[in-house]
View 1 (cartoon, helix red, strand yellow):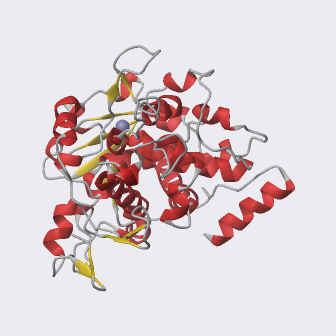
View 2: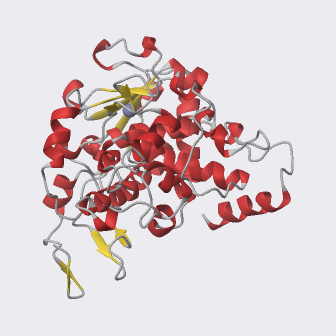
Amino acid sequence: MLLVALTLSLFGALGFAGPLFQQRDVSNTPSLEELRDKYPGIFWDEVFTNCNETQRDIIIESTRVAVNDLFPTFSNNRDRIESSGFNRFFIRPRERGIDLDWSRSVAFPEFSLIDRTFSNLVLHITQGGRDSAGRLKRAKQVKYTCREVNNAKRCGTGTAAQTHIPALDEGEGWATTFCPVFLDVYEYMLDVGNVPNRIVYDLPLLHVREHVILHELAHADVASGRNTYNHITDIKESLPGYTPNLTMYGATLSHKFAWLKSTDNPSSVNPAVGYNADNFAWVYTNEWFAQRYGWNDDGRTLSSQQSADELIPADDEFVDSDWSSRADEIENTVFPPAGNCLQLSDDPVDLYCTFMRGTEDDWLAEKDQPFVSYGGCDLS
Ligand SMILES: [Zn+2]
């Protein structure tokens, strides 16, 4: 982690210093046993049976780069919530001009849910997938496959990937199908990062596979730690100046979605971002490219001069066809703060959230004692 940051800052200081920023490693395809050992949060069997060799290597390499390069982008939760990426796609705490920020609004419990979700997502692939006895358990894994579950025929519509709830693939658990768009149109993050002198307004055009890996993980409750009622979906929203009822995909729309209430009186964060997969993924993609290219903007804007980001649909998500009724329910519910997060200082948003293996229901069922107090500090 440190080494990556150091390498990036060196490049930042010296400028673009060679033909290749980092080399991809596709020389050796790991065995199924090696993949199970390294990435237990993923059920790998089908990439050896339902994907061809090229597809298999792309999925494995994208996963490796996501784990090794994208996920360690932030050294801690504090860095994450204060980053320009978090500001762009969620609005950081105490941002100027925002009256009701995460710490000063009824949305605070949702902030802890967001923070905990990030912590879970970036650890699931390497830390998840096992039961309390440490055994690999399919129900706690996300299957990677090239086969469309139930012959859904959605890959042909231009979608990059699809994530399915267990009920759609009976007895199989969560599953992500990678489509030809992911394999043939999207690129490796390290290759995209090899092009010199990109500026922050290029961000909406940077379609990288590792971003899709993170986006799809967000849909799998077993990776996000969410449960049915707070499942992360792809929200449709009507934004000023845009066609009504667009899916909140892409950097431009995800940014505008987060800042939707910033001109209201009082101005506010938009708690719905905590339920939209692409907002989670863009925080990391934004930060990785920001470190790569030395961007130091404040994340308050993103040019809408480019609309090409809206031309590539990111994925299909097969869980939630009824976000609007759930949104009403969520708006009228006061959630308790996430039980596995500790407040580290007087600042309510200064949290440390432990990794939950599986969903919150799994975590509650497996832990021995209720997590209500820690060092005399009541967290419930
Ligand atoms: Zn999605």
